[in-house]
Amino acid sequence: MLRAQWSRWWVLVAGIVLIALATTAYEATPYPELRQIGLTVVSEEPDGRCEVRWRDPYGASEARDREGTYRCAPDRDARLKAPDYDPGTGFGYDAGWVLAEGKHKGELYSPDEYEDTGGVIGDYLFPVGLLVAYFGLLHAGVRLRWRRKRPGGGAPAQG
Picture 1: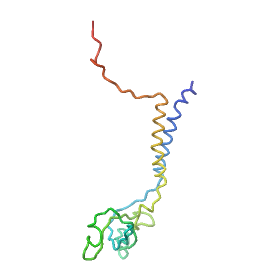
Picture 2: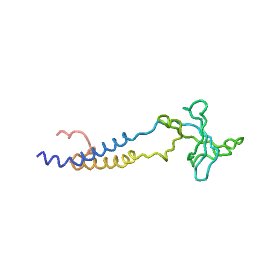
Picture 3: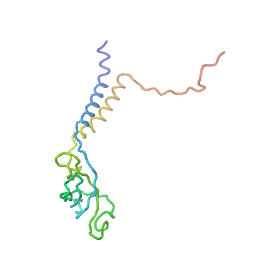
Picture 4: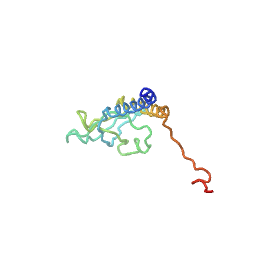
């Protein structure tokens, strides 16, 4: 008897295991601590590459102003692009992210360079786990019933 009951629930258990694996993959992915900063765009290429300057919020007082390359937002407003943002200098503006911890603290962070393999695996496992768990519930005989009101409703009429 136990074997017959277990054979009905294995699909549900498999779905729950997939959901647990997806959650574990999300939690195991080390996302860096970030801080948003304003970037001064010195030059910009048509493909979105930019030479930028920023003030390092974590650097020593003499090394606070830094320069580097960054991928600027391609859909930012034309008023933020050079030379419209600051006609006096001809520079533009964009918002960016710097790392707020670790040995690279204060360096620019680009989401394009970050590998999120755990999150990507979780993105696929979670919906598959939900689907398998749903079919497991259907297979095990657990059904949702929608109650409909009977016409006339209530108790039957007395004689």
